[in-house]
Image 1: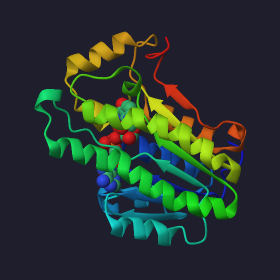
Image 2: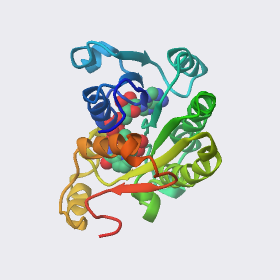
Image 3: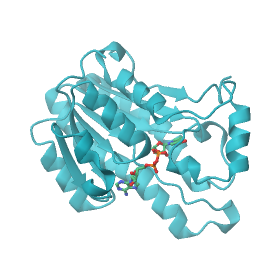
Image 4: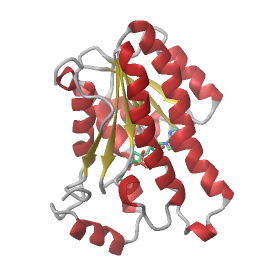
Amino acid sequence: MKGLKDKVVVITGGANGIGRETAIKFWNEGSKLVLVDMPSLEETELQHQFPERMTYIQGDITTTDCLKQIDQATANGVDVLINNAGITRDASFLKMSEEQWDSVINVNLTSLFKISQLLATKMKAQNSGVILNAASVVAHYGNFGQANYVATKSTVIGMTKTMAKELGRYNIRVNAIAPGFIGTAMVRNMPEKVIKMMEEKAPLQKIGEPSDIAAGYAFLASDDAKFITGTCLNIDGGLVNG
Ligand SMILES: NC(=O)c1ccc[n+]([C@@H]2O[C@H](COP(=O)([O-])OP(=O)(O)OC[C@H]3O[C@@H](n4cnc5c(N)ncnc54)[C@H](O)[C@@H]3O)[C@@H](O)[C@H]2O)c1
């Protein structure tokens, strides 16, 4: 992939699932990683995967302390930010608690805003940078029990387009990826019949791999995508458009 070697790449939620696979992909491309996640490094066994070229920030992205650590870790510049961390707290709309609403908004949206603003300011000073945001296919068609989650993911697509419009003049590209159903803990926790239904719905008749999404992030961050901004790439086995 063109132009990823030695680039400083910040990945939130980089210890598990799609984030972890994305970290491995960029590491293999020669990037320098700043991973941000809640589990300890030992728990994730990442130290075996990443003996070098990595800073690991163990923290909660909704906290000021974590933001400060991200600021410090990128004191010498930042090339790519991947706002990957995300949570679900499902409940049907009439039963959704304020706590369920707030927690999903805080992690999936407010943190994305704060981290992006912090790092886009540095990218503006450098006159270069890439910001990639995790959306979801449910942003396009809604999902039972996920009013909070869908609110964040459809907003992420709108924010991506707006940020692309505002930041393009500073040579900062902003894009989103809307994954379909990908075999990570988030999906494995769903009822089996829902997973089966999703497999049947997708034209490719299967659930995707975290590496399918990692490949999308690497492409969008690379120089091969230097004329792409403000878009949302569906990587979903055809679920939305098939
Ligand atoms: N898996 C899918 O099918 C799917 C589909 C559509 C969108 N997505 C999106 O892709 C992203 C990654 O999903 P995944 O399936 O890999 O999830 P995952 O649950 O496997 O991993 C998410 C990671 O984010 C971290 N995280 C959560 N809250 C955090 C916080 N406050 N501070 C720091 N780290 C935090 C978790 O510790 C975890 O390591 C999410 O934004 C998700 O909404 C996933």
